[in-house]
Figure 1 (cartoon, one colour):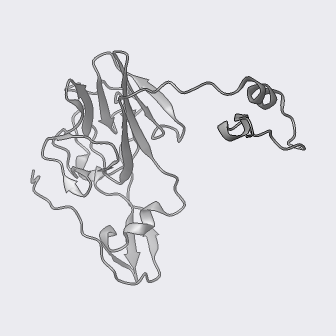
Figure 2 (tube, helix red, strand yellow):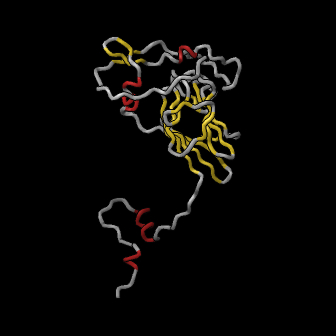
Figure 3 (cartoon, rainbow, N blue to C red):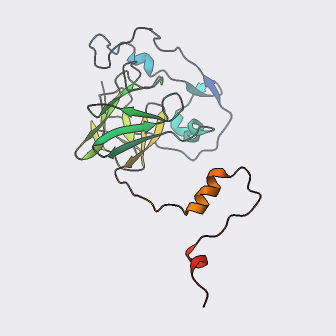
Length: 221
């Protein structure tokens, strides 16, 4: 298997009329397999690469020619790694399009099409065991598991392991998301009790809020 493929380079060509071809889907077996099970071999990895293909006048064209098409009318996808008070977890909206907290006792979150993956994603360009996000004393890392289509961070292909930083753009198969990281916590000053009371009991803002800034509380000279 050749792993030395370069990340696609975007082009500035104008956008002609485009259609979408839907090739054959992947195996939809109902049997749930463990992520690392030897019984769950990637026999259909070749089929996994057969994702939807952009067509121009009946001929396939590379997705790199129209990178904006994959993000139209799609809200921001993200994975946030949080490490506080000796507890480490991920928050992401990649699963069922809603934000969820993912706790893993060994701080290893698997990613792939395999149903045993922590982030089981139905993208046909993903390998069954595509990558993992791992946390150790140095922080969060993205580890590619010799996937067919590779893993990319900020446009660069991951050579097995990459130390993730806040704001990194990650691409796995056809899925693109941003990685955010939180390792600091700040305690904020309490809100003025009268303002808090009004906020908690407010049904309609028919009257303006009082200004409780420091300038209003200083005595006039």
